[in-house]
Amino acid sequence: MSLKKRWSARAGYREALQIGLPLVISMISNTVMTFTDRIFLGNYSLESLAASVPASIAAFLFLSFFMGVSEYVNVFIAQYTGSCRHHDVGRALWQGIWFAIPSGIFLALLCLVADPLFRLGGHPAEVQRLEVIYFQILTVGSGPFLLGVCLSNFFAGRGLTKPVMLISICSVIINIPLDYCLINGVGPFPELGIAGAGIATVVGFTLPMVVYSVLIFTRENEKQFRVLSAWRFDRDLFGRFLYYGLPGGVEFFLDIFAISFFVFMIGRFGPVELASTNAVFSIYNLAFLPTLGLHVAASIMVGQAMGDRQPDRAAFATHSVLHLAMGYMGVMALLFVCFPDMLMNLFRSRNDVGDFDAVLRMGVVLMRYCAVFTLIDAVAIVYVGGLKGAGDTRYTMLVMGCASLACIVGPLIVLHHLGLTSIHGPWICLLLYVMVLATAFAVRFRKGPWRRIDLIGRNAKPERG
Image 1: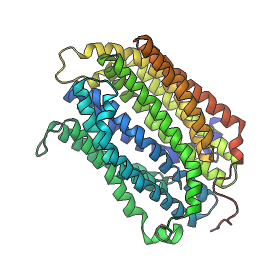
Image 2: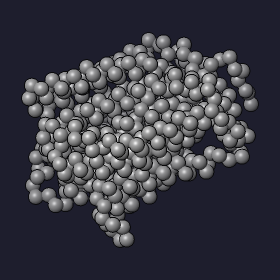
Image 3: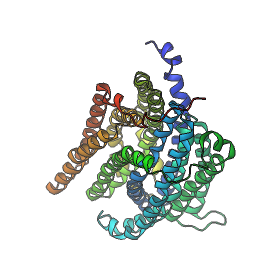
Image 4: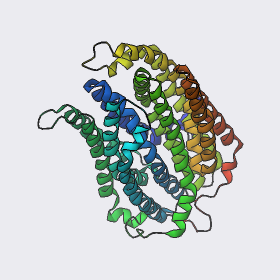
């Protein structure tokens, strides 16, 4: 199909951009928030930068499972919307809320295990102390984040992604200046360093939850979607939600676990290797998080098409999103290759006396790895979004588990045991990992067993009108 025809076709580029672009902007907003946070910390002290990435990755590792499950409300709402069962939207939303509340409490309790957890990393004592502080604040604030993610699905699952974008932008507008003030002690704010960065992030988590609650739980939405009257726990729907959502959460957890393990093992190679890898991962977020917005767009479009019993449209939508993702990631890969020095120098400390030069030299090399990784990752990200939108979550979970053990965990343990401390070994393992994922998900999607999955059940009669 020509580009012109695919632009205007159902589930083509235009529709993908209408749904996906606000999500991309939302993810870019979150990326900017994370990126500026790292820059502020890098300018504050090299130890704060070195501690921020392992601590935030560790916090996100635990959060990722519950986030992956909570996000799966999105697919149920998309399929109910596609099948015109609008009165079931509120029921689906509330099952996500009943999952998110106890999950947030559990995550908050993880602050009690922060000290022994970061001792396992073997990082320098000052870095460990800062890691514990940052991790504790982020885990305590995970509950509002989970609820915000769950509530955002009310709009995103129905293809109304502009509210998600606007709320994310407002959160960033508040977070960035608050972040700077709390880290550096500007005006009436105390100088809290990495603790200030964590507090500002939690504030950024809480604002969306409050705004979504005000927008969703209205009389108008009650009439069409039953967002108030469907508050009760529904055992059957909750069970179906967990059946498909839990593997999605495990898959997301395993992916983040592989990256977390990678970063912690790099920390054992040396402080320069750790700082350069942390900076490169922070830069890579400029490519990854917006593409994650396209991943969600693929899930929404596939979910709506499958709800309408049109698997061919679901496949067409996935490939439309894939083309857009590859285009974006291609641009980012060029930036990584052409301007690595400029990007790395954003993390140079204001008190630097030459210590950053070694980090810069190694970071320039790693940016080349990152450029290749970026292009391959686009394929994996979009195809897994399509598979999850159809409900094929058990396959994605199994592939992610096998790949993380075979390509990341096992090889890095062997490299460490043999005393091989070259930075190239771990990064080659990382490239192999994402190549396995991209190949496995692409082959699965093209074979098409996902076309036969009945996620929402067809016994209930659709409500038209």
